[in-house]
Image (cartoon, rainbow, N blue to C red):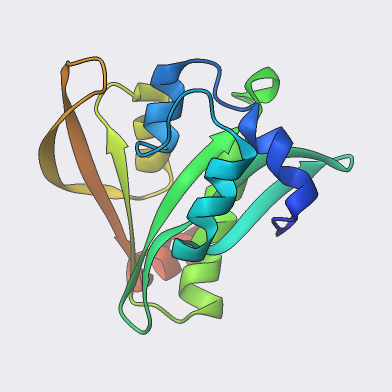
Length: 167
């Protein structure tokens, strides 16, 4: 698996990652079902480091920094994986790429992300990678259900410690 910056030609593949309105809400809460290339392109000026994971030249994952404060923090956003290849390590790979980008390339002291409480596979992955919950907010889904939005965090020192242990 490799990664590179998002290219315009990748956007149609990214639009195919969410299979349902609920999945789209998990990865891009402000988007309207179905996800279209125009929605992705319209969000890009507010994003930082849009990145795709590729496997054999095929785009299989996407993520970016939804927020970015130079020298302070970034928030991982829009993380999504090709539905045919989920549970094969692509999300873990891509999150690892973005964590390293935050801490090494941008030299940030922390990385955060938001994840809905019903997205159990993602929460378990983030915990495995060392992100810890720090806040819980209530949101209302487009279909009217109350849902919990967890804010997770990792600091650079924790990441470095985990990298040393893994080596």
